[in-house]
Image (cartoon, rainbow, N blue to C red; front, top):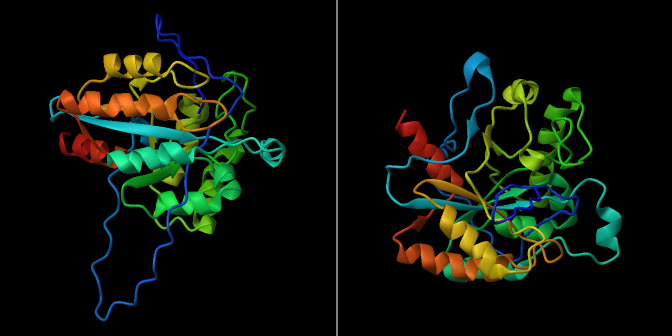
Length: 280
């Protein structure tokens, strides 16, 4: 999801340019088969369905459960962006991922299936790194409602298939355990969309802090907006692309040490959702 935000009003306006992230790391050595059965991997935490069984929506974690914050990065290449990539436009940002690794910042990447198709090695690298988790941002990055910042729309009878197609793309790229979390393109949803996706079994993840990094060139302004907005349990929406969010990596290098000075601990979205579920 690509968002513009004016610092004064903190209002977002999603543009047509798209973002993405990822950087391949050294290949992981294959592991021998275990000699004895291992315990089953527990399912990641999700929220219970909402009223009438609607897909639950998560915006932030508990405010009184310690100073935790989740940085999230949208990798939102759309289904029709292939020609732009073929002409040399970069929808990834290896330096940002490298910086997150160097700073040891856990993060959640909301990735479109189309991006995973374009950058399978990078998707696999992120997905196999325990520091990160990959979540679903649809396959196409088309809107799930009408009038969503000019995005093309997905028909209601194609929404479920679009989300499932993204998971298929992740698996094809070699991502072993994509999370059961979904972020609506543009952050746009309505009751119909929540009802339609209930069959997929995902938790919809929004945010409570908009970084304003999309299309921004002033990294200090982006950092200031995040630092002023973060509260305990916050979810920050950011982007990672060399073409449409060029200031993000520089902003992260300011945001991370400043929040740590204030006592914040960086976590993935799954930890915040787990904490929220325990408090219910």
